[in-house]
Image (tube, rainbow, N blue to C red; front, side, top):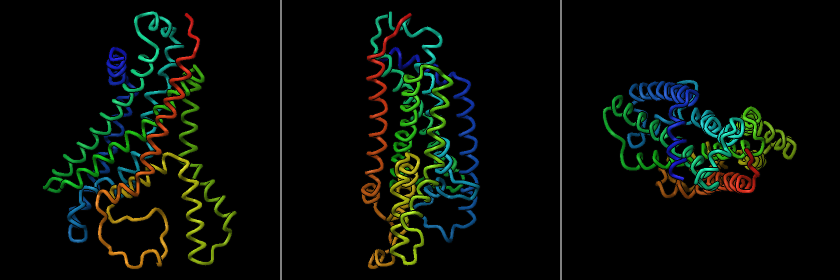
Length: 306
């Protein structure tokens, strides 16, 4: 597996499509971070000093925040790395040649998947280091320990999130065995999960609660929207980020006034924020495991001929 891993890792970093996507994400990410840093420097009196670095990821001084940008365009990285992992080998006729060498099938698919996951981890970690370095340059001080832990956990959640799209693209690459079909299917699922699930959730909630006239009915309608939206990994990621990078956040969606009575307006500790988002993190990890597990079973049973 190590031979396949290092070979695939080198191919990813030498690929023009990955390099172009990497440069695009880094440039837009740095632009969003720089704009947020400049806004923080101009409004230092109204910003809590303990969580300034988290605002570099969540502040939307530009059209979108860096976390929102990564949540929307991050799946493209996973799809780019995975849609031709197996179908490209079929198209070039090299799969049977590779497996005729002393390389096992499980070593091949494991090496390809973990090489893609390592590439995603390097990309996300690089973005985090650039944000920290640029933030120190703009603000003049480093992040504290809790900010650093929250940003590291944000990186791990992002790797799981993009890893799901990598595993899904790998699965489509096995199912269709055609590069174009696998890419189109992955893009279709990405667009559906990112854009159309929220539209359907609003429509269904409007049917169940057509005209909310009380705060309880409005909260019930919002709960229906949130439950349906959580079918999408994009929603799981965005909700996890909203709690993880905003210590003042305590609930998902709308909270009634009766639910907020007696609660002190203090930031949550890191372990309390993790308790809130732990179902989201485990669901993302489970989606990655299920998609890759199905791909593994299909590939181990597939008939491969020269």
